[in-house]
Amino acid sequence: MPRDVLAERSVRQLGPVIAQEKQRHENRQILLAQIQDFRTVGRHFLKRTRNLAGRDDETVQSFESFFSRYDKALDELEGRQICGAFPPRRGAADVRLIMGLKKRQNH
Image (cartoon, rainbow, N blue to C red; front, side, top):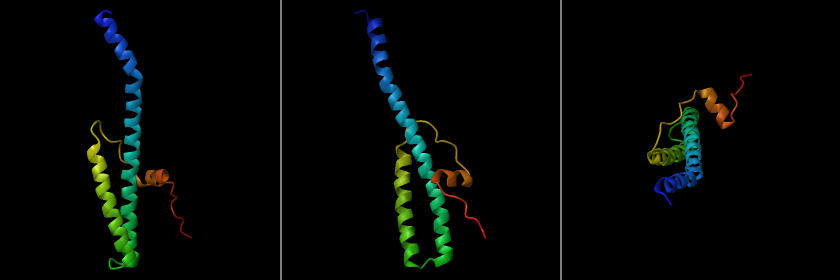
């Protein structure tokens, strides 16, 4: 079999594998962006809990511990990303939409 034909055949066979890996990478990028958005929502939540209950409150300290571990895990995930830029950051309204949250109505 000629070398050119063999190379073309190999490329065609790898096409679906490459497309699948590309899609998986794009999906991971979307998930990472959503996880980063959750970090932003979490920081606002933690700030509110500190304001409401005080830094010395046991519940606040538990949340601080949780978000500290979350930040470390997210930093590790971000470090694993090898290729491409992350999707653009979103505004607070977009974060609420992604997280399925609605803006609280004041009555």
